[in-house]
Image (cartoon, rainbow, N blue to C red; front, side, top):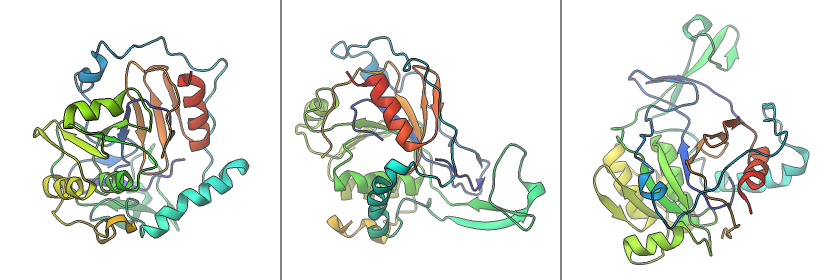
Length: 281
């Protein structure tokens, strides 16, 4: 799969999040714009959508809401400190999760890049990315986790390295929706917890999840920075349950698609504000 370099500009509210990772793709047939190859099926969310214990209410965007214009490398002035602190993990983790497995970049004539796609241009040439990924799961992997957990972060990073489409179930402390469900499925509320609907495998323990994913969907090799243990607390905010999972395209820099309201937007700070205004109670 081949791709071009794309620059795009996550909140503790408990809701299902369907996350696509930016395709830094390999030698098959995919050109990276925003979407990756796996498409969510109409039944992939049935287990939650049809749960009678989970109520749904009408979802509408905030009054007069308009998505912000994306600004390349321009953090909002009141979010600079947040951006710096959020970036520290990237340094300590040696950049794991930024590049997909087998990532490489070459410069090609601008004419080789399809119109409508953006690539970093230098002296008439454009950066073209490629990578090597393993088999693609037919259905998205399901991961129950929460943002403040360092073990969960390790799993999110290997998901980015393998360029997998994943259905995340946020399980913040005191969360009433998905956190208890993990106890029902696995016998204990411990995170992260993974379910692979393609194979029927489910498991706890971040290191075991990472090993499973790289063996099943990668080249079998765990990145060094994800094999060093912990060297690598979100709280629940009362929220409405969206009828359909939100789609986030990212590794740590998101683009949001909300199929419940039709909103599509960049800019992390504004995404957080939108989610709070739309779903928080």
